[in-house]
Length: 598
Image (tube, rainbow, N blue to C red; front, side, top):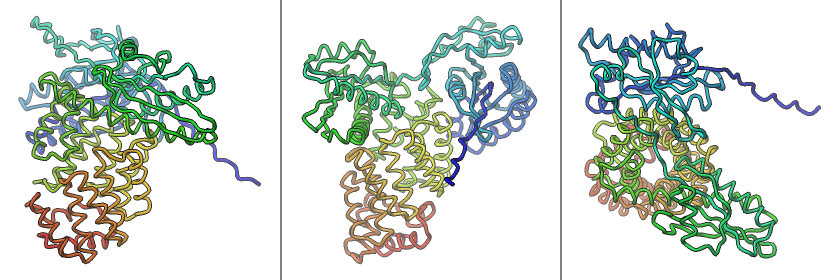
């Protein structure tokens, strides 16, 4: 008998009130006093917040750093908890005179999907996004929550209007809860005006538009239609920009003014123009990226393939187009942000400027990068990529041999990566960053690969996800898998800011297999991409020494110490995840043979 197909999993659906809360100014307080801040937070959470959750029939779903995700049976329970916990924290502060945390709370009610105790869905994401509109000590709710609870609690609602939230397809109406002792009520008592509520983060908008000529066949139109849908879908999965509704096709003979007017009508900063033509059994796909505000073509390319293999050809072309567009727009956004005065930069701009310093390994300016990222986090605490980039900074500080406290930097990288994933669990960049932190710094490569696999599921064209996967597999000495991931990353992004990382993964994959000459070749290529890449210097030294090229290895060691005089093998061994142990010993023995200090 043929095997019986397993039944698909059955998930529970239910209506739930979801609250997301965090601590205002937590990152700044951690920077000033990490031990004291963590102890205060733990005391407030265990002594005030969690008992209050239980008292109102709630269930604590997740704690990540200073963030809490809580489920309640009803909107009334959630709102009463929020009011009571804000009042309890205020009362404790007034009684003790101690410095107590100010919470920001967002509440939404919606249908959620339940899987093994975890809840999923837009209802959760909306709660996580709106909480950042609350000032310290405040509670904000969606209109759905307001409609459920108004006239049933001793509080009123102040309408904040409709807002477009990041990666939420529909506008969300939000209200501020005003109750006795809340910041707004206190301001009203003194005739002060409440602070302006910041709008959600605005990412650059991208429109994908078909180009057609008078000679375009109807069959070509159908192929172009499919191509446009695939490009729109793939670009939307990158989470790097908003995709706006496309307009009617443009003629390929349209002048610059027509193209710019189309962008203005769509409210798009960037246009992706795509066309399809055939010649016999061959098909040509052409794509172009235009910066509409600068009236500048940023990139253009064409791809030829066989008509009888349309599906595979289109899939390959879309992957190449998307993998090129994302870094091209990122470069344009960085250039744009760097020309603006610092005081005018929003969170997105700050992250763009900081990312440029990190990707170039411009470590003399990493204090500047940290300040930019802290400004982004303070200005928009629910901007996940700010936390992810800060996690990446701490990872680089450790891996590039600049850390004065390795354990503290690793702990900070984990906290930031976890917070970023909590805020944006479907952002491939955030997931790739978490995968890199867990596999490289936390010596949990399997968990790291779990993040990578999820990132690739969301965006198969994410060169970064494939590259991080290559590095994780190489540190597990799984060379075949590492090289396969590297080839995919390299095909998607032959040259780019993360190319040294990809190539270093290939070097390590060859080194652990004893192919030292190939390992040295790849390490040299990584250094050609960026001569400041300390990790590539270290891999080159070990590969050369293990290949009995001691003179070259010692010369490379002297070059490394010229860049990083404080480099010590013991510090590298303290965190390096390479396994099994004998491969780590092989790696380190090459460094000792080259004369690097222990």
